[in-house]
Length: 106
Image 1 (tube, rainbow, N blue to C red):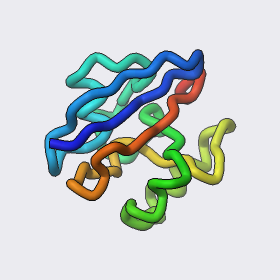
Image 2: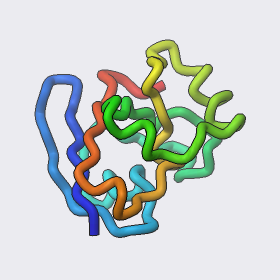
Image 3: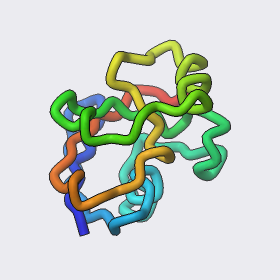
C-alpha cells in the first residue's frame, strides 16, 4: 500500500491508502474523493480525472504519453504539472504523493 494526499480546490485534504498497481484515478474513486469524474472509466479518452501533481513527485512518474498529452490539451486549466490520474499507476516509490484537484473537470 502507498499513501496519497488529494487536495481539493478549496484546500480540503484526503489522505488515502492506494493499492500498488492500481491507478490513481481508481484509488480516488474507491475512497470517495470528490473531484474526479472519470467519465471514460480510465481509458485515457477524456480529461475528467485531471490532477496537478506536486512538483516533488513529477520525476517519479512515468513519462507523459502522446495520448495523455492530447487529452490534457483539451483542458483549459492545464498546468505544467497536469496529469490524468488514470495514467498514473501507484508504486511503492509514490508513497506519500500529493496531488491537487482542479475546481472543475472538463
